[in-house]
Length: 324
Image (cartoon, rainbow, N blue to C red; front, side, top):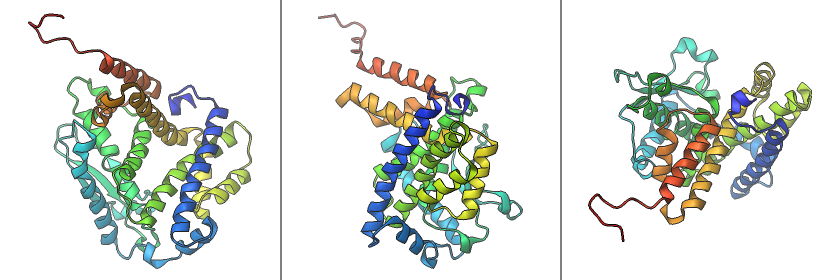
């Protein structure tokens, strides 16, 4: 568990954290359902699942939507970051021979020598069965300001040795990408309430994982308890629920990193805000999170605390100036 989360959180702490997150996210999901005229989540989920308007009508439509959301995010990046990657980002379809076993979208790193851009590889197979709800949030997760910002910036940091430029820590990388999905909301995106609901669904999946993974491996839950919890707190279909459950059984704690990493970054941002007040700069904070490359979360905490302390230190006077 410590290897996956790179924190000292105990299974009980993670389990309780998950329960709190599930309750919080469900509250926001109910608000969306009420906004669209439904009395509860059960009736809302039952209505949207078969709605053809919320499913893709072609492979091109899926690719175009990913491109649209990434393109609308790119002009906003200078508001969030001081350092932007030189590596470009392209949206490409997954090769047809890989469609059966590939997730809806995944990120492919750019080449270190700049010869190849980063890619968001999108699965357009069985397009008529694919929901459109989560495309916007996944575009921010896999593309910008998610994996592409994090990976490309690290690759381009000249002071980092090659192993640090290419290091992977699940809680850091997936935590950053999940945090990036929330940045989309803070910037005023997810204007379509169905798209915002898809964002909340993605967040809920990661919160559920905190509960059911620790339930399985620390509290000795049965498989059926995991399945029942998913059905109670998620609109995931039966095939997805069974697949997710298999994943947690065979790979304990792996899925905890997403939400733990996101919450740790949010906690560090709030700490920096509280400490720096008017001196807090979101661009400088994000640069400090990314410029050191992928790190264990406890090391990232030390890095941000050191950075905050440095920001609070009065600047030395320019050379030649006299002290008062």
